[in-house]
Image 1: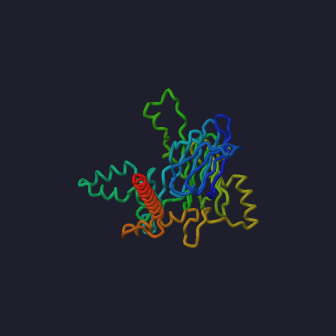
Image 2: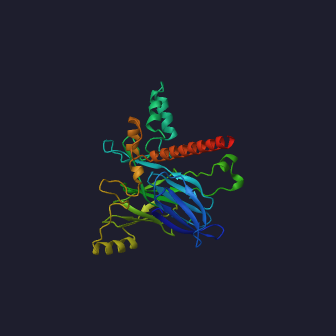
Image 3: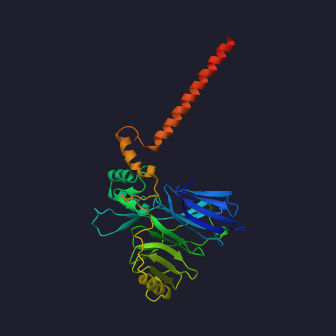
Length: 340
């Protein structure tokens, strides 16, 4: 059994109900509802725990998931295929003094193609290009890049009509709104586009929040509600043109009413919805993942770390080979006795 981190009940385009469950084991399981023992499929692609999830059921059967690996992925839960990914946000280390709190990288945590081309043009000898590949090696720890930290999403939301995707991240006082492109007519799609079902989600509008956002949701009128820390408690963003969002918290009756009640009760909001231990480590992160970097460092020094998960795999393979040799030796002795 695995710890659940999200649950949604939705309907497919065939009027069949699904229950989507996200868990600590980097996956989302799609089961039929109420016959939950029948599994429709899985959404696989994250490399760490699922931190939050949202799903809708209209003309488009979409699910948005976020993970401890820093990625937010868009899925079609009817076909169990990934259809898009939101850009990963990197929080700069405290050693950086340039004033920027975060930077954006592409889907795999590497610089965008434009940045890579610019770096290659500035370095004729190609030495800087080699350093570029080393700094963003696919086998490196995905949660950090050169002392920079991936911002883990706390909450994600999908617009009821699949127009927008929203994400709030840990230790970042803002949320990002990404427009979701509409479905193009099949007749107008090129062959190459049909082969690649990914949609572009790189365009965004960043909505600044006065305090740490804890949860985000869309309403039926396309407004965005953000649950935040005190003294704001609730932020309300609205759009008039269907594209740009504006903060109307000061004039929103809903925001005023909730804030008044929360202040009268002296409600204290948590600093984050990610539970952490005394060492600042996220408790949803598996112990093996927490020690992965330490194990990798010990491996470079020589040999596997004593608690490295790879040791178990190696030991099982060695035992299997030993049993195979013992069985083969026994069969050989039996054949010799029969022949004699």
